[in-house]
Length: 114
Length: 113
View (tube, each protein chain N blue to C red):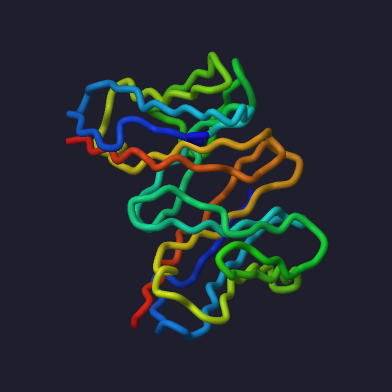
């Protein structure tokens, strides 16, 4: 069975600073990988996804993520954080060939200081 | 398009009561699912459906029932609510079972006392 680990529960960065949120997955083959963002009181919005091909994927709101098979990682990055990026971020993995069942990590809450 | 809608937004139940959480989507999506979100545990899949008339269990199905009589609607029923079911519930949909890009509703916050 697949699993996802987000080792950082809470991260605080200053506005304008760079950001990296960590995600490690466990799956026997190349998985489908996702990052979602949840603003307070809202549902989840897809930031980006990796299915195959180029290991560096671009998403919305200036985010990008890099798939590293050797490290079983799919870390989310942003060069310059804006105050509006404060939210909770979830990494998720889906198993190829099955229904769209996603396994989510426990989330990382991002706080942005001005 | 309204996307994925959920009602109610908030609900308080007493232990043993029953209720139905409503979920509807207007995107003609085949795949729909229910997740619960608990602090420190992320989202966990309760039930899912790959099309009208077809449902299956997810990771945490106990205490919940679902049915899918139409493409648009996917209600989640709690037959006898328990305090352990206090959570935020999210409904999601995607084009089909292999598209994986899921669209989430705004959630229902349920408290069972």
